[in-house]
Length: 528
Image (tube, rainbow, N blue to C red; front, side, top):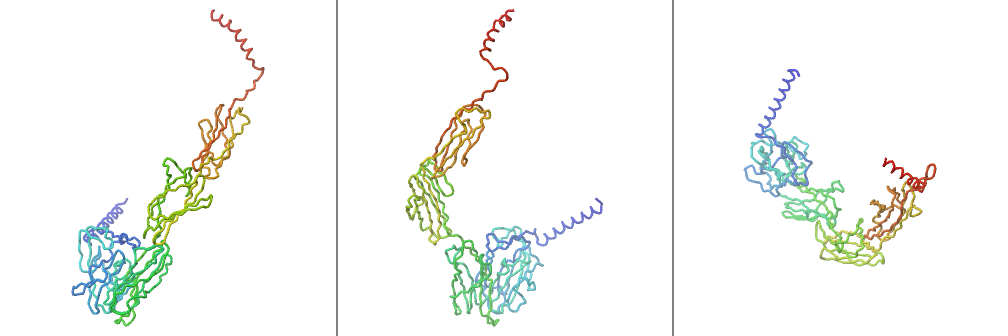
């Protein structure tokens, strides 16, 4: 590498180190990444990690320092705008904080207030800016929209904006570096001299048999039409609905409900409050919206039933295939518990139908969590178990029981024509069939009589080659799903076939006589 390249690289590294040092010096501490999403918030925007925090409201006051009454506190975790009680003609001061802010990081004041050149349009950046006040270092800080995380060695800057209220109500939100104080820029704060309102669900969540109901409450000095804009996951189009039974004369507290109807489980409904009200200072009917933002979920209210089946005889076993239980025992224990998202369990009902004679018995269970079942031998039963809640939803479970005490039928044969089989290959084919009309065959095993067994379930024949000439006892075992077993055997012997002689036939007698004649000769040889 040339000296010029080495020198250039060293200069770049030095510049990067210097830049990092200057950035840390600007804030008085190391810049921390900030998670913009509140933990557990249902209304969080997609995850963002930014250098700056959202603008954090510190105070809303009259310019003389007196605090403005808060009609509803802003909720940063739920993206609810604050509502402040105001008076027309008064001067107001808004103080906000920005973590990692500086004298050049000036928040923007978006508003529809009369007398200032501002806008609620998030894309419009030609709006009034806050005035920088000071910068403060603190050892720890918790963001209002992320109270679970503690930031350390935090630097934040303080900003102020003053304006005079010239109308009965004005909406506003504060933005810095593309981040709104309410988290979602469409959600706003309200400063008003005559109205406070908001909506909420009548319950934290709903189930499919409940009407989704919104509750409106607040205070109003003049008449107006209150409503909300909503949409569901089933129908993403925004719809508007108005409350019909609210106070129609000034100076009243109001509380009213609106029924959206029933929805299927899994549907989410999101909505914001709206209001059409006459503003004498604007001399027009004024539309206030997006003061808050809510979401409610419709969940499945059916009881979640945990149902188990056991044989009363703990030493016995059964076979379960899907929801059918097979056994040669007649007594069972049924255990059950239920969990509900909302409401209480009213009762269980259990209907048992004998499929042999179509007779049925029905039991209503108001308490307890187990039942004893006794069936007749060699019968098939359908059991319908229903858990019913006091919210009008139920869960139904279908079971079947097959009680079988009869062994399977079976046959076994082989390809040999006699008990003694002369075969060099020692190859044989077994033929078999088996059946169980009530519970069905669970498995069939063919024991080949040589410490080898094979499963032949679903087969009708099996061919095997033995390693040795020998006698064999082959047994077929068949077990049905109820646990009954039957068996049958077949016997045979593999013998070596006669080997044909080449040349003169062999004579055992001639061989013996010749051998005896050689004995004196052999002995004489030994004596010599």
